[in-house]
Image (cartoon, rainbow, N blue to C red; front, side, top):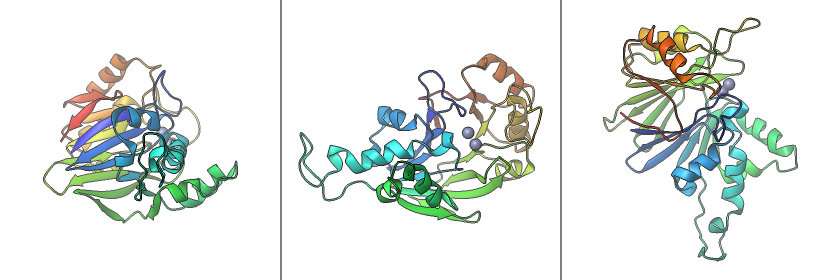
Length: 264
Ligand SMILES: [Zn+2]
Ligand SMILES: [Zn+2]
């Protein structure tokens, strides 16, 4: 499988950046994992958005789904999606309508978001929406997706993707506080994408995120082959992030950048 980082910012975007969005590709199948604010523009930079087969959403925070709004507008109004010729586009009888897999309750949340300005059906009409359950298994092309609850401020799923063609395994921790469930879920994976949001643990309230060192501890306990630290603001020093992680994980450590590509 090939993973391309489209966006890696936390809930506020880096300068010129995008929030969470990762492109997974294998044997002609393209899946977008999360679609936070800024991701649609980055998707357009790297790929043709009408060629995306499916979008999978880890949880219903803005920085993980908000660009479903411009993505839906494109699928609805772009000249190339129309049935009649428009300008240089010849017209199509088969406009793109990607699958959209999201947690339970997502359809209602999407309707409320775009309903704020009277467009309730926008996302429903643009995508083929399916809500997944914790025990759902999705097969999209040659990739098999499984889910696991992780602790965060809203219902959130870590996602494990296995190539059924022997093309490796990627585990995505989504957003989470320290937890053993992710360690178990990611055990022996080829690439663990894990958030390393916090410069220090939350001082008050319930925890919802990880520090770079905690992220690396999860990677170490899970015996992963390679860890990709993400959801880190450009307002933190990347070298500091890496050195914190090195103290807890002896294997290869990457810090996510837009456009970075990883193969398993
Ligand atoms: Zn979140
Ligand atoms: Zn987030």
